[in-house]
Amino acid sequence: MEVSSEPMKILHLADTHIGYSAYNKLDENGINQREVDVYNAFNQIVDFAIEKKVDLVLHSGDLFDTVRPSNRAISFVVGQLLRLSNAGIPTVIISGNHETPRLRETGTVFKVFEHIDGLHLAYTGKCQTFEFNEIKVHALPHCADKERFETELDAMKPDKKFKFNIAMLHSAVSGLAVFRMNEFNELIAQDSQLNRGWDYVALGHYHEPCEVGSNIVYAGSTEKYGFGHVNQPNGFVMLDTEKGKWKFHDMKIRPMLDLRTIDCNDMKADDIASAIQSNVNKANIEGAIVRQKLQDIDRRELGLLDMTFIHKITKDALHFELRPAAKEAGQKVASQDAAFDSLEREFITYLAKIVIEGADPKEIEALGLRYLAGGET
Ligand SMILES: [Mn+2]
Image (cartoon, rainbow, N blue to C red):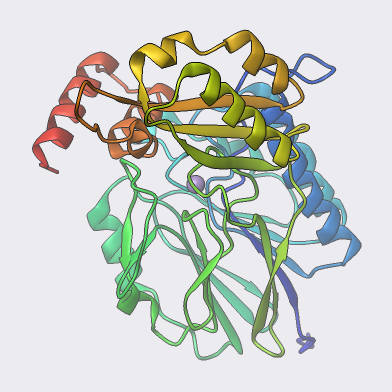
C-alpha cells in the first residue's frame, strides 16, 4: 500500500462542556438557552470541519460537562460525531476531568460512541496511539489517579518512524507560567514533560486559548461557562502539518459583558441605580450575559436599590446579575467577587455535578471546605 504524504489540515478543539446549562432563560423549545448555546458552538465547529474538508479532528477533553450527561446531551453528541464520521473525517477524543468517573464501576459515557466509524477514543486512563498516514497521535486522557498520569506522561515520546507526532492531553501546565483552572480534580503537567520534540501538543483543560511553549497549545473552550475568562476569545485551532504552523479561529458566540465596576462609596441607592443605567446604556446588552459589580456598597443602600427599575432597564439581556461587595460599618471587606472563581466555589459547583459513590455529598463538601480553609491538600 502506498502511504500518502499529503499534508494534513487538523482541527484541534477542547472543552466543549456539552450539557452545561445556566440561568433561567429557555429557548423556543423550552430548553435552557445556555445549554443550546453550548450545542451551537460545537455544531459551528463541525460545520467548519466539513466545509473545509479537514483531514483530522482532535478533541482534547471535557467533551461533556459531567460524568453523567443527559440523554439530550448524549444524543446531540452522537449526531455531531456521526456527521464527522459520514464526511469521512477521523476524530480523536480524550476524556477530560469533567467527564471521567473516579471509579471505574460508574461506567463511562464514551462507551456509547465506540462503534462510530473513524472515531478514536482514549478514556481508560492510559495513553493510546492512533496513526493517520505519516502522523501519529499519542492520546493521554484524564486519569483519576495522579501517579498513573505521571507514569503515562513520562513514558510518552515521539515515534521517529513518523513524520509528525502529536501529543494530546487534558491537564494544567506548570512552568515559568501556570495555566490552571483551580479545579478540584485537575492534573498538572510540568512544561519540561511536554518539551520532548513533539511536533504539536494539543492541550485541553485551560479555557483560554494560548501557546504554553513552541507548538504546545491550548485551544481554549468553545463557550464561556461563567465569568472566569470573560474577555478571552473562544474557538478552535487549525494546524497545518506541512508547515507545522497553527492558527486560532475565533468563533461568534453570545456576548458576555462585565460592566465597569461602580465604586459605591458614599453613594445613595438612587445614584447607584443611575450609575447602573448609565453603564447599561453604554453597552449593547441585547441577548448578552451581563454582570455589574458594585464595590463597597453600603448594606442599607443595597437594600434600598430599586430592583424593579434595574430589571426593567436590563430586560433585553439574556441574563443580568449584580455582584455587590458590601462595606461593613467603617471597614472595607474583601470583594465577594474574589470568591466568584475561588477554589471553594469551584469545589461546591463540582460536587453538585458529580455522583459520589458510597459517600454523603454533604460530608464530602464539609470535609473539602475544611481542607481548603486549612490550606491542606
Ligand atoms: Mn474544561
